Image (cartoon, rainbow, N blue to C red; front, side, top):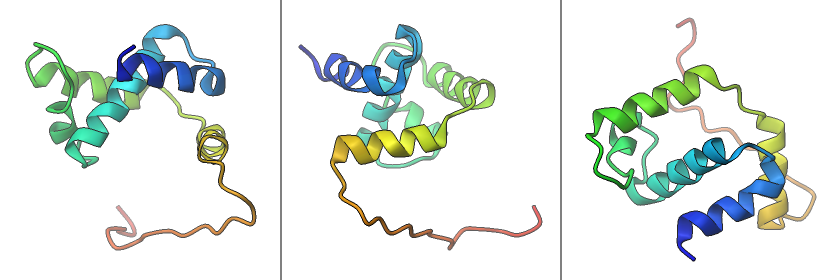
Length: 101
C-alpha cells in the first residue's frame, strides 16, 4: 500500500469527505511535506504526476476558493491523531500579519 492510500485511510474516519476530496487533501499534504512551504505556486511543484505545474496550481486555488474548511474539526482531528494530552497551549505566530489590508 502506498503512502497516499495510507494517508487517505487515516483521514477518512476523521473527515468523512468523499473520495475525490480526500484524495486531493492527501496529495496536498504529501506535497506540503515534500516542498516544505505553503506558497501555492511552489507547493504545486510537489504534486506527483505528469501535469504541467499550472494545473495543480489552479487546482489548489479552486479548492481553497470553493471549499470551506472546518477548522475546529481539523484541529480536533490533529489532536486525536497526534494524541496530544491536555492542557493545551495556543500560540500564534504574527510576524507577517498586516492590519488593514
